[in-house]
Length: 258
Image 1 (cartoon, rainbow, N blue to C red):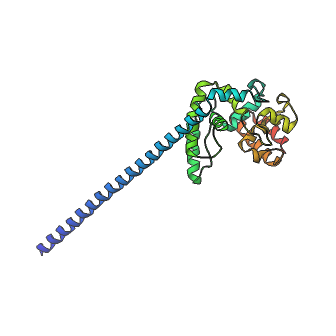
Image 2 (spheres, one colour; image 1 turned 90 degrees about the vertical axis):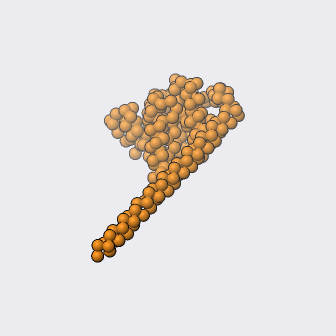
Image 3 (cartoon, rainbow, N blue to C red; image 1 turned 180 degrees about the vertical axis):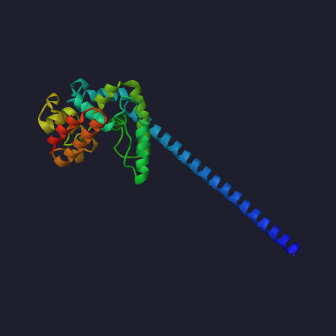
């Protein structure tokens, strides 16, 4: 009887030992798989960074940044930042890049937020681009949402921030943004949509224009006036959020959109 009990105990111990060994083996396999996956992700990341840098270098070689900026400033209806109403600048910064004067061309917080939203949607729905990055896209790259292009934007944004002041960057952005209906500067948009010089625009008109470049074909006042007003209301809310307008001022402007 004692022999049978001891035999059973030996068998149980061996089974427990085998189970523990199996667990150890499985854990080692899991760790190796995780390590391989991490290596693959890092490798893909490094490849994308190299491709992005190559795209950036190719863009610079096609036309050096200094020449590109000179060419932009020579075009008709180029608008100097001093000509732009303050409320228009405030509206653009509120809705496009409220940390514009604080970052060095890339907003890590905005990028992280965009990544989270992209993962939730399982596709590129947000890019987290700063005004500087949007300028890069406007003058060198396409509007297509690709990782390689986004990385190239980052390299270009650092170069622009290194060589130009913030107000210069904002000025260039305002003169390379598309406003729909064939208008490529705020001066052209002011004349085209309202028949006015930029300095004659009302606060209502300034804020409406500030919202258009996000999606010109959607928010063009001549094609989709209701959507343009909805976008204008979004801009107004952002301006309140970031303290560029009081709620009372916002309410007065919102009444005009109805």
